[in-house]
Length: 458
Image (tube, rainbow, N blue to C red; front, side):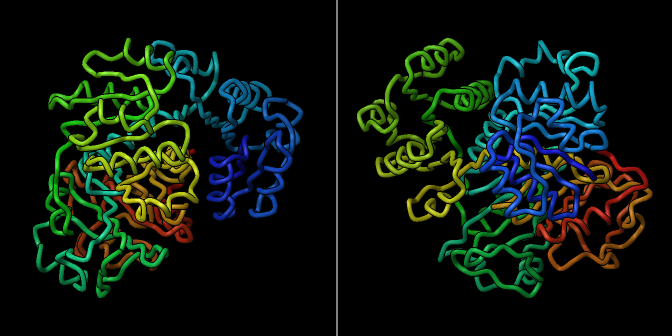
């Protein structure tokens, strides 16, 4: 597949890393020559320095025979024009654009992106993706990472094992015997900074970060088995009243189980807009690092603090102060991936990386086969791919134990006729089944081959 990635920032570089590692023909375009040079020096990609929306630059990047253009620059307007040029001048089959402005994302104006107007096939909103991720973290406070799969009937949960975890030093196959009715399986373990797909004889140890794929109805039980207390968020404080914080507050207001929310926003104009948009939420204007303001927000009684400003350091320090003041849970928005190693030492319970959420959204529309969802884990170390099995897929009609999966691949769950099942070796994969697959990054091409059909669904 020939792909042009416009924008060589964090998101563009990460997508280029994914695709070039899978032997796609990738060209990166950015008006910053240093970013282009970084991409070409570290990845197997071609690079063009120039403005992505210029027809001659896209032509130089190979748009005449490109299969896809991914517009992920920092400018919404550049991304939109790039897709328009790719369509009108070069007839590129698929165009993906990252858009941030909420005005462009208003459902009232969705006709704007029809082929005869502004021909964008897929619109990705980082703010919406981050807000959804924050809500998932709040729904499972004991997990440091969460993602929904299989029509919301299954959950991927990242769980940090403590010293008093009741299942440490227990082989995974024994867990299956002890909890035979539990519809959950450990698909990934990070130990000493290295992520791997465990085998049935592997044991779990304190400080392991385990990724558990669970039926949604069994997720609370799974958390308890891994030593986590299941709690409910009744009171939340949100630091940052911009697009992300506002979206989370609106969603919490709309819940049937009432959650008391207070928003702290430094900018008076942004705070006033947030107050006008919310009905029951109290909006406080001031610095989220100010202890007096945190006390005014009753931080000591908060079940969770969610720090989602556009400044990583502010988010981290706000979480640290809130936890010291008595907040039970701290969730932090972190743009810089090098800062994530500070989360555990600073007692921050969970973090959200906008780059990872955006990359996952884009990958969902790139993968071959009938892919329904993709979630990128960690620093692009692994992916969870949800895909429908078609009659032409190599795995259709086979028993799970007979499929030659790579060592870095595990099946998290299988959905048959709407029912989510825990995978067993005797289970037969059939046409129409939907499977959730954990795969180390190096094994993704082989997973795609196993899912491949006679026609590529770009």
